[in-house]
Each structure stands twice: as C-alpha cells, then as structure tokens.
Length: 331
Ligand code: COA
Figure 1 (spheres, rainbow, N blue to C red):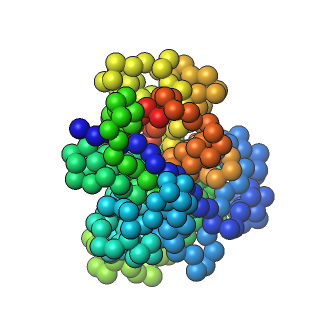
Figure 2 (cartoon, helix red, strand yellow):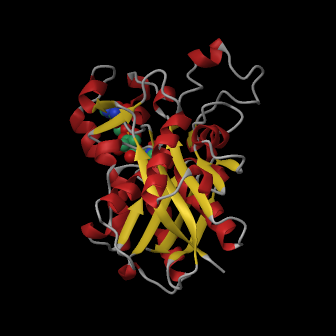
C-alpha cells in the first residue's frame, strides 16, 4: 500500500496588511492588549474584489511549481474552507476551473480550523487505497468580511484573518516515509461556542435586514471556552496520534499547531514538554487564518529549510465544531 508524501507547498496572502494600530481606530482595543492576549502583531485582510478561490489558486500554483507539476497532473482537489465564496457550489470547483485542471473531482471540507487536517486525511485515504496518486489539498479563508470591526466584535476581529495555503500530496512507495496516521474528533455539544448563525437554510428567507442588524452574520465566539478546550484537546490528540505509532513527544522534530492564538500554542507546547525549536508559530505575522494556518506555516517551514528528510512532523488543530485532530508524518 502506498503512503502519501508532500511533493510541494505554496501560500498566498492578500495584499492588505492590517496592523493592530489600524484596528485601534475602529474599536476600543490596543496593540498591547492584542499582543499580550493573542500574540498577533498584524494580519492580512482582503480588499473588495478579492475572491477566495483565486487566493487558493495562487497558493496552488506555487505548490505545483515546487513539485515540478502542472494542474493537469492532478487527480483530485480537496478544499478546506469555512468561508466559501458562495453557498453552493463549493470552492473546489472554482479552483479546478481557475487551474484549468480538466474534470478531476473537487470536494469541499467544512471543518473550520481543523479543516486542513481533515482534508489531508481524506486525500491520504484516497492515495492509500490506490484511487488517486496526486491530490491538491488546500486550506483557504476569507474571515475578514464576516467580522464586526466595532468594539462589540473585538474579541474575534483582532484574531481572525485571510489567506491560503496549499499542498500537493503524492503516492510514495519508499518504506518509512510519508503520513503515518491521524487522530480525528468532533464534539457537537459545543457547536455554538464558535459559529456563524446565518445566513442559513433554516431561516426563511436565509438573509434578512433584521438578521443583519442583529449581527447574525458575524463570527461569534466564547473565547474562554474555546481556550479551555483547545489547550486540552490538542495535546491529547498529539499524544494519541504518536502513541498509535509507538512514538512519543521526544520523537517530534517539528510540531505545527493550528495558529489559533499564541497563548494556546504556548500552553500546548508546555503540556507536551516541547522545546521552542520543536514548535513553529507564525500567528504574529498572519493572525488566525482558520483552515489556512497549517498549510501556510508548512510552506514557510519548507521554503526556509526548517524540515529535512527523516524529520518527524506533527500537525494539530482545534476549532469550531468543536472539531480537532492531528496528523503525524515522516518527512
Ligand atoms: N481589546 C480589548 N479588550 C478586549 C478585546 C480586545 N480586542 N477583546 C475582549 N476584550 C475585553 C472583554 O470585553 C473583557 O472585558 P470586560 O472584562 O470588561 O467584560 C476582557 O477583555 C476580558 O475578556 P475575556 O474574553 O475574558 O478575555 P480573555 O482573557 O479570555 O481573552 C481571548 C480573550 C479571545 C483572547 C481569549 O479568550 C482567547 O484567546 N480565546 C481563544 C480564542 C481562539 O483562539 N479562537 C480561535 C479558535 S480556532
């Protein structure tokens, strides 16, 4: 049975860099509060006219170039986003069209901050069962258009951001390399702790002026509960995915946690007993791009030479759903 290896990575961030100082102008917050509570110094937000699938296409083009492949070499697309450009169809088909990738299948995965890990698990299963050999896996979000940038929305507006990351996953026959396993979970009891109420098909009609005025279309979060669960679930999941492979945290060369919040990443690191050089964080520059954080960080690590063949890499994520999970792979 083949394993899956990463053949190439790419990322794309929108042009508009939004500093904490800029946010201070529209809401009651401060650069100091944002840095201390979240670690974020700046983030990238789209400007009008930017399209989510186009951000993904730019990241995918970078990933294809690094892999030395063309879009026509792909067998499938798995697209993780919680902020699709349209209600339907999903962003996967728009990306397929932009890349001119023929009629290959393209699906969307809607598991929010854990989106990339879940999308990777789908692509890995397709490769291991022999169905496909080269799959484009994308994590992309435009969060900024559903953030309340007044003081009422300050607990989310300062955290979330836009961006895209992409990975080309390929079948590998060489023993000892590639994705070793996943650990995936969901807990729907907490679905409303981090969510966007509308527009939704349960509302008749799905979009109303009244709902708009009530702020139903904004991302809403119980920050304390998210924090409490995240710092428990991510370490648990990392331990579980390693134990299943007969490995321990001392075997980790690099952990890339979902970039929810720097304080969360630091607590996850402490709970796992990892050193600073075993954990990669970039939330300071990019904010929380939801499904985009892990592939964006992975691309930075690949391009800066942070990963070398044989390294044990662990990815872990937690977010809206609640959904969480981890992946362990031998680079
Ligand atoms: N600027 C200034 N003050 C803010 C603020 C901001 N951007 N956001 C919230 N506050 C205020 C609150 O209104 C509250 O004021 P009050 O005491 O007068 O009511 C105070 O800060 C404390 O709020 P609280 O929510 O208890 O703060 P906290 O210490 O829990 O920090 C978060 C808030 C959001 C930073 C924190 O809960 C967190 O990191 N949660 C996890 C969020 C996350 O990672 N989400 C992504 C998951 S994928």
